Amino acid sequence: MAASAALSPAAVPVSAEPAVDKRRMVAFLCMVFGMFMAILDIQIVSASLNEIQAGLSASGDEIPWVQTSYLIAEVISIPLSGTLSRVLSTRWMFSISAGGFTLMSLMCASSSTITEMIVWRALQGFIGGGMIPTVFASAFTIFPASKRSIVSPMIGLVATLAPTIGPTVGGYLTDLMSWHWLFLVNVVPGILVTISTAILVDFDKPDLSLLRRFDWFGLATMAGFLGCLEYVLEEGPNHDWLQDEAVFVCALICAVCALLFFWRVFSARDPIVDLRAFSDRNFASGCVASFIMGIGLYGLTYLYPVYLARVRGYSALMIGETMFVSGLCMFATAPIAGRFSGKVDPRILMAIGFTGFAAGTWIVTGLTKDWDFWELLWPQVLRGCSLMLCMIPINNIALGTLPPARMKNASGLYNLTRNLGGAVGLALINTLLNDRWDLHLTRLHERFTWSHPPALERLDAIQRGFVDYGSAAPAMALKAMTNTVRIQGLVMAFEDVFLVLTLLFLAMACAVPLIRKPRAGAGAAGGH
Image 1 (cartoon, rainbow, N blue to C red):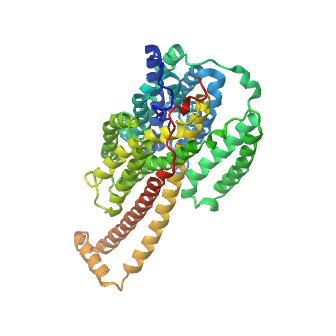
Image 2 (cartoon, rainbow, N blue to C red):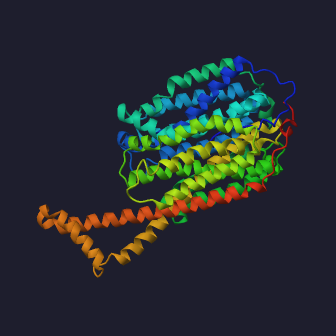
Image 3 (cartoon, rainbow, N blue to C red):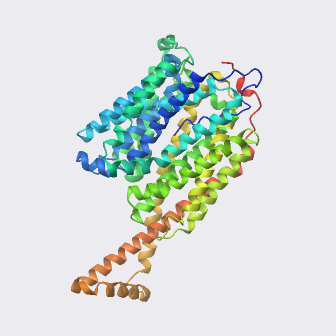
């Protein structure tokens, strides 16, 4: 989901590099913190949806929209940010995004109904989403090549760490205070980021003449295409896909808008999004790798908590504490990955990263219902280290051959691929998990019958444990055994999902030799 600005040190000529102005460095750090808030806000809320549901008296069907509305709005704003930053300049684009995000956070905290919450969350996602790609474009503009091996790991760490620690932070805030603080925690830092960027940022100038040629039709078709796609991917797995009327209608709108959007992009004089960046082979390859990494980032951030909650019965706080290992490994690996990024072929680092992903998910194919922190330790270590080893070279490969003139637009497209990778990955994971669970339950039920002696022996042993409950013991034993069978079927479904992810990551690692190494100096072709 994020603008992890890793740039190849070879992307810009090293001769006569200007020193980085301290004022610009402070301004950039403020922008990075704003990006951190925007990314963190997704996972920090997802960990406490039950508390929000109780506080707003929302139904089970309504509460997922607290997340869905944010994601739909954000996925529309990310590719739009390139055009808006050229129109308004980086200073006002980012200041408006940070200020609007902060105001919407305050409005979310003051919501008294689920309808209000959904509206404010959608606005929060749309306004705040522009911060993410704008940070990357700024990093390319203000830092010379020699500094990018330091900047790349820093921004990559922010982009991957925020989703990882979100459940932990959300669990602590909700347990110690209330769900309102999930949003109130953004207010003071958001005000500081807004003011500091408005005062300090001076990277470029606005070009209001672009407004006269602004492609409103392209914006409408892009919003319909991406918004409906995100809805279908979010809601489809839970509503039997096209069997649900709302999902079917949105899929139809998505298809029509997609056709109109691509026609408009390739025929308009000034399209809302410039897709010509995909004509660069390395940019296209990097976007594919970013899409796969999005599945690893968001898919595994989703799978481990689901297992710990549904099988182990962990609370949100316990889940966050268990998953914190990945964050620590990212911190440890970031400087190492940054140091190697300028000395080792980025394709080698990328292959090592995806192989590490595959090794971590392969370990979990031996999952049982008794796994907890220690059994999940090495899979999480491999995930945390692999994320940083993948993040930097993927960005180097994707953006090392693009001219700076295309950076604002390309950063939006590039970050969109990671978000879409996460959305598609979660939809496929949910669908596969549910289908395999049903299949394993069917097979287990065929074995656990009244004519199966081992099943009867197991039932009798459980019943003896409830002997103190008298006549209720048989029913209690049967219910306990049914729950055991369901959990075992779910664990077997998790094993299948992790096996599929292992094959996916291995396939990406094997495809790395097909990618062309970024050429030294190619990124400077367009000039600043």
